[in-house]
Amino acid sequence: MKKEDLKEAICDFRTDMSVAALRFMNIIEKKALKPYNVSIISGKIMLVIVHFNKISQSEIANYVYTSNSNLSQRLDFLEKEGLIIRISDGDKKDKRKVIISPTEKGEELFWEVYGKVKAIKKKVLDNFSKEELEAHIKFVAKMSNILDKVEINK
Image (cartoon, rainbow, N blue to C red; front, top):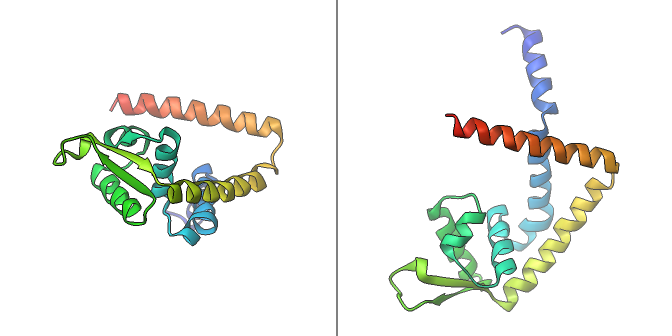
């Protein structure tokens, strides 16, 4: 690869929207989640649990893109921290029959963190016009549809 080609590849990579999205997620993690010892995946899990209030682990898996083992580890951590409770549905051996709910502490923490995430998001998005945001939403929706088709046609 020529030096000029490498420079162009690096430039293309830096301007890629995925890099911006990763930077945005890193800022959210650093400024809104880390002070509360919460990871991005734990934050997503708490969002689902708080939204539904009572939900099974398999239902959470439908909304959060992570492995079952990672989900179990995250739920164990959230329970240990007193942010969720697991309510047995009768069969203590089968974790799929356990209902998960947020504790009062978990809900309070979620809404506090959510407020910080929302403030960061607003600070960023206020720099874009309505037209720019609409164009971005259309682009992301189209990209998502294309990626769905590519995945199906493997």
